[in-house]
Amino acid sequence: MIDSAVSLSGCCISEHERKLLSTFLNFNKNRLCSLGRCDASIARLSAEHKTTYEGLQHLNKEQQAAKLILETKIKDAEGQISQLLNRVDLSISEQSTKLKMSHRDSNHQLQLLDTK
Image (cartoon, rainbow, N blue to C red; front, side):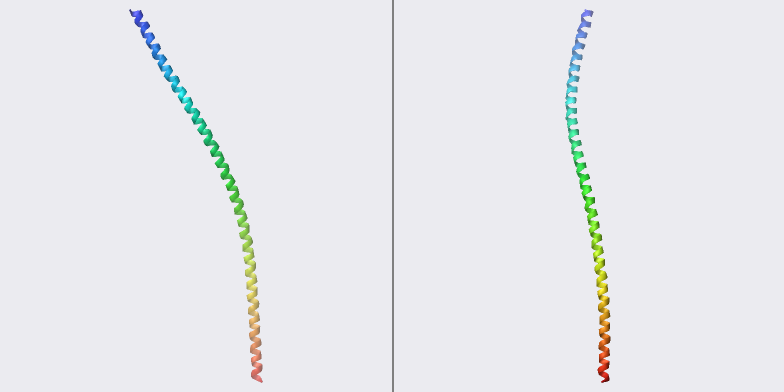
């Protein structure tokens, strides 16, 4: 009777171990499938990240180029404005000189008229 109890308990342990092993294998199989889905998601996100990063790098280069172009145009415009201001100042000075000369001539002619 003791021998049959030992063999019966051995049989029950084996059946229990088989159930545990089956459960463990099913768990691992599901986990591996989940890991496969995670790996695929990680790969997709990595590709999206790379594409986004490259796009940002391209936009940054375009922005730098546009900045340089604008800085050059601003310097050119400032130079043109400076030249125009110099020409305006020169013109004002010339007009002021002409006006003074005209005023002197007028005063001189008035004096000549007064003396006659």
